[in-house]
Length: 210
Length: 265
Image 1 (cartoon, rainbow over the protein chains, first blue to last red):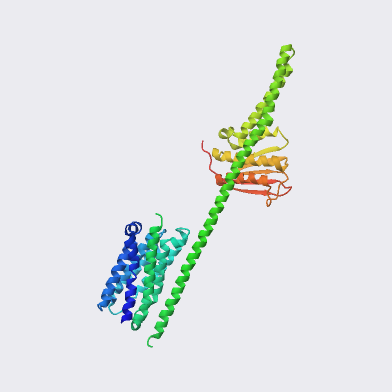
Image 2: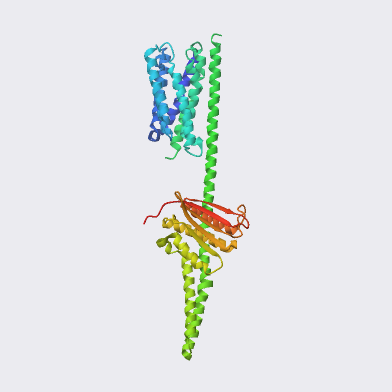
C-alpha cells in the first residue's frame, strides 16, 4: 500500500518541475507559447484530481477516455506552437478526427468504470507518429545549428519517450490489473522524464532570442 | 505466477520500444548536428568563393586601369609629344617662309593617329555604342578597328536571331569578350579570335574561341586563372552558366549560356 502511494506520489508530483519554470518565467513564457503554460496548468489539475480521487479510493477509470483526449489536444497545440512547419496536415487531421470519433463512441458504448479504454492506445500510437513527424520537421526546417538549444527537441523527446513507454502499459492495462502497482512502477520515471523535458523546453524557449 | 506472460510482454515490449525511441532521439541529434556542420562548411565555401570573386573583380579593375595608364603613357603621350615637335618645326618653317604643305600633312596624320588612340582608349573604358546599337554592332565596330592594328584576326558571327539583351547583360558580355581577347592576345599566340552570338530556346548563347596554343584545363595558367575568375563572377551575376574547352595546341573555346530576357525598347 505504502509502495503504491509512493509511486503515485512520484508520478503526480513530477508536475512541480515544469510548474516551477512556469512560475519563474510566467510573463515571458505566456508571450512566447501560451499552450505550454496551459499544458502545465492542465497537467497540474489532472494530477491533483487523480491523486485526490485515488486517495479517496474512488475509481478513476471513468475518466480514462476523457483525460487522454484532453491530453492529446493540449500536447498537440503546444507542439504546433513549437514547430516551424505545419502540424495539422491532412493525414494528421484525419487521424486525429478519427481518434476523437473512436473515443466518443467508446465512451458511449462501454462501461468505462470496469475496463480501461482501448482508444487510449490508438491515441498513444497517433502521438508517437506525430512526434516522429515533428522530428522530421525539425530536420527539414532546422531551428538552429545546435539542436540542444531547440525547445521543440526537448518537448518532442519527452512526449515521444512518454508515449512509447506507456504504449504497452495502456494497451495491456486490462490484462495487468492484478499487477497494477508493478506496471505503474514504470509510469513514474516516464512521467518525471516528460515533465523534466517540458520544463527544459520552456527554459530553452525563454532563453532563445525572439 | 498468474499472467506472467503478460508481464513479460509488457516489460519486454516497453523496454524494446524505449530503446527504439532512445535510438531515434540519438539519431536525430547526430543527424541534425551533421546537417549543421555541412551547412557551416557550405557557408564557409560560399564566403571564400565570394571573397575570391571580389578579389578577381578588383584585380580586373586594377588591370583595366593599368592598361589605360599604359595606353596613355605609351600611346597618347608620345603621339602628342611628337605632334608638339612637328608643330615646332612647322612654326620654324613658316618663320623661314618655306613650303609647309608636307609638314602640315604630317601633323594632320599624327593628330589622326592620336585621335584613334584616344578613341580606342575610350572604347576600352566604356563602349558608348553598346547602349544605342547593342553588343553585336559594338563588337563588330571594335573588331574592325582593332584588326587594323595587329595581326590577330578578330571575327564576329552573330545570327539574326540574336536580338538585344538588357544593357547591363550586354555590357557584362562585352567585358567577358574583352577579358578573353586580352588573354588571347597576351598568352594564346593565336591568329584568329572568333565570337559567335545566337539564341537557343530561352538562352542567349555566346561562343568565344581562338586557334592558339591552348592549355590543359587541369592546370590553368595563373594569370589566365585570374581572368577566368573575373569571367566566372560576371557569368554568376548574369545567372548563367559557362563551359571551357581547351587542350595544348588545340585552341581554346568558351561557351556562355545566359537566361534570355529580350530587351524592350
